Structures are given as C-alpha cells and as structure tokens.
Image 1 (tube, one colour):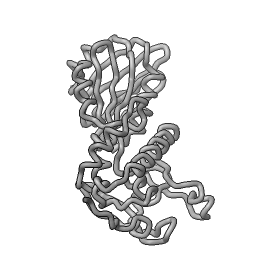
Image 2 (cartoon, rainbow, N blue to C red; image 1 turned 135 degrees about the vertical axis):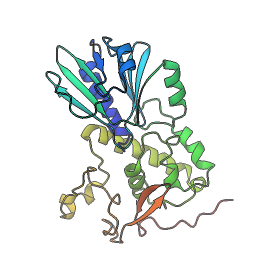
Image 3 (cartoon, rainbow, N blue to C red; image 1 turned 180 degrees about the vertical axis):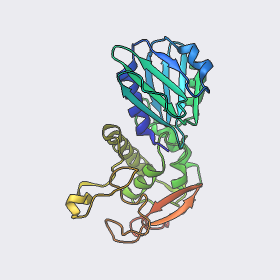
Length: 276
C-alpha cells in the first residue's frame, strides 16, 4: 500500500496539472459515472493529502481517493490515451492537454466538505502537514499496552505511516518493536516524530523511501545498492535473514497485526522496561 509521501506527491502533481483549469470527468469503467457528471466541466480548486487519503476539491464537491493495496494513478501529457483496462475515473484538461487515470482504488467517492471533515477527524496527525499535532498521537501511545510497532500502523497515531516507515523508524531509534506503547518515553516520541517528518519529506522529494544514514549508504560501505520494487536504501524492511548493516545480526521477521514486521535483534534489544 502506498505510504503517505506518495499521496502528497500525487496531490502536488494534480495541483501542477489541473488547479484553476476547467476539467472533464468521466468513468470509462462505469463505477463512477454519476459522480463524474456532477463535477464534469468544473475547475479544480485544490488538491491535498491527509495520511493515505487524497482529496480533490471542485467547488462544494470533493473527490476522495484511497488507493488501498492495488490502486494507481497515472498521468499523461497530450491527447488522452486510449482507454485500456479498468479506469475508474479519468480527469482531463486542455491547454495544456493533460490526463489523470485512476485504477483499482479502495475508495473513490464524492463527498461534501462536512463529510471530509468527519473523515479527517478520525485520522491522526500527518507528519507532512503543517497543522499536524504530534501530541495527538502521543496521547494514544502513552495509554496503550499495544506493541509500539502496531501502534505506528494505526492511522489515528500517525496518518500516512505504513509498513516501511514504521520498521525503519523503530530501527533508527533502537526501539524494541514489541514494547508496549505506554513504556515509550516522551523524548523518544519527540525524536521519532522529528525523524519521521524528515524521512517522509525526503520521500516526497525523491519518490522513494531512503532511511539509511550516510555512513551506511552503499558507496560508504562498499556494498551493492539495494534492488527492490519498493524503493530505496533501508536497514531492515524486507531484509529478513540478511545481516544487519550495523551489527551483522540476522534481521528477523514476524507477523504483527496482519503485517510483516522486520527488526534487528542486536540493535533493537528486548526492552526491560516495566510499567507502574
């Protein structure tokens, strides 16, 4: 599933291509026809992301998109390309010609501003948004016995964080992923939040997730670059059984809350902290 930086990149792309321009909406697949007709011919006023949700505003009507596991958005310059496959929603504009095709989303719906407010109120702070309040996430963490690795995947704690960012963030701060959230220290959360903001901003700029520090990059260590469809250089994500870049312990994998969790038992030793 795309993580938060991807949605912010998409919002920026829609803004650059369509904002302020009259657009045409259609649903070649046929599952978004009625909604498309309501915004056909309208100008795009705004495009923004909150966590893993994308919102495109056309006056008082807002298209909400959640890509889920299989959703994709592709952009094309010039005349609209032939319709191939199941395109849920197509947005086009002229002068300059530009097309955006949405395929396979988990959600594509038309909402009112009130409905958008209700949806975003259920989300936690987004590290990439200027209005984010990390204390909102901290309040959920500090009173929970749930493992911190599971809490970081809770979109009410940190909207936009997915499997890669959570594994890499915990590694970078040497946090036992199975430690209860209530045992995390305030200073640790503050440091993790600041780090998360920096990592995700880098993801917006580059379109990939890179989490290794300069001294652990391929050139510095004399190792080959990582080759993986999920992107950049990482410490533990999808490196199960391989040696840790720092301590050489074998990276481990376990299932937690239905997702694969990766961590280094050498760098992220089991906590001895106990609650009151």
